[in-house]
Image (tube, rainbow, N blue to C red; front, side, top):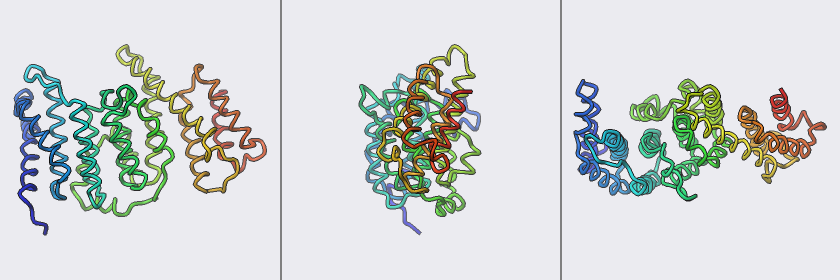
Amino acid sequence: MQLLTIDDVLWSCLESLLSLPNYALRNGVQRNTCKSFFSDTTVTRIFGDLVGSLENAGEVSILPMLRSVRLIMELFHSKEMDLSISSSSGVTVEMMWLLVRSSWILHINCNKRRVAPIAALLSSLLHYSVFGQGHMHESNNVPGPLKWFVEKILEEGTKSPRTIRLAALHLCGLWLAYPNTLKYYIKELKLLTFYGSVAFDEDFEAELAENCDARTEISVLSRSLDPELVDVFINTELYARVSVAVLFSKLADMAGLDESTNRKEESISIIASGKMFLLELLDCVVNDKDLSKELYKKYSAIHRRKVRAWQMICSLSRFVDLSIVEQVTSCLHTSIFVSHFYQRTSDSPEAFHMLDYLTYLTS
């Protein structure tokens, strides 16, 4: 049995203290009363103490500290939303930079990639209260704190299947909720599209079955994309790219079916991002040195990446309109020529998927 240090007890107590407003709400205490549990100064000071201590957190303290960060983010958000009890302007970009950098050091110092800490890290830093703010992602073409963190976590995810799957789960849910942020993440969407790794992670399943913290933290991640998809496919190598395909399918529905005045700007943003992603993938299959190769072994890494690219391109067909149809058909014609479409239809993934694609465009 691992002995607790004074710091471990301190952070667990802090988590319990910060949870009081939530418990009070569940027990019928009025919302305004809960919001005023902590003053602006107290919340800001706790945030600073947490950020300053994350880098040196012990293993036992990681979860209580990350949960405390999440609770603090919720408190900042509630105060920002109700100026009658607070003059707080919420979490600033500077505060987020301090948080993501300290949290990343904490993460890379962990010897093991356990489910609960990864999920807690994602839900605490990529918090719904700040994710919809454009300046948190990019400002003057310079990555903001959230963009920086997403790049880091997905880069690590290429070597850690559970990290990229949990990241895909949370990010796709957030992108669905805040489609105005998609334009900042075309490169990351491509990474998820092409991702493929270990088919099954037995330790992942075991942690979910045996560890209550793991189940709790996964339940906090954004599951708005498709809960059934999560339950069935979260531990498969398909999950990351299937999540992206489902995301854009749902976004296409949102953009096409929702014509209310207050959502028109969101629909325009969705359509623009869908077209941007589609053209980026088409450019890859035409110009990327690997994806544009004519000669490759069947079932090789290049072959698998080609198939993934064309599958995603097909799923993005609904975003083709008159403004880009010429670019789309130009890329298709180039791909047809390079792959000798009429001579190698049985062996070429381009042939199979382009046939579907051309059928859609001409229907």
